[in-house]
Length: 91
Image (cartoon, rainbow, N blue to C red; front, side):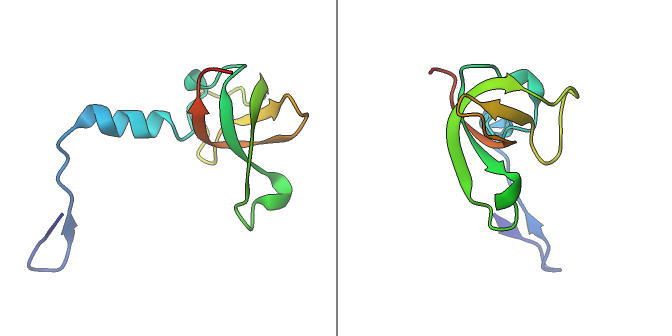
């Protein structure tokens, strides 16, 4: 990271694949979330605290291709929340 004379921060991006992978794993794009994936979600009741719940996706509930708060899913446990992170694509 470099700091310009005016105090603005300039980030040097060296690996665009690494950045795409990070965007992919954050749960905001529907195309990356499939049934059977292990994910971390935030439940409605935990939105203020940000507490995450781990589980396996049963259904993808968001119809739009992306959502700025995260794609809404139902876990196998029946809990519903928005995906904050994809842990793995395997069960």
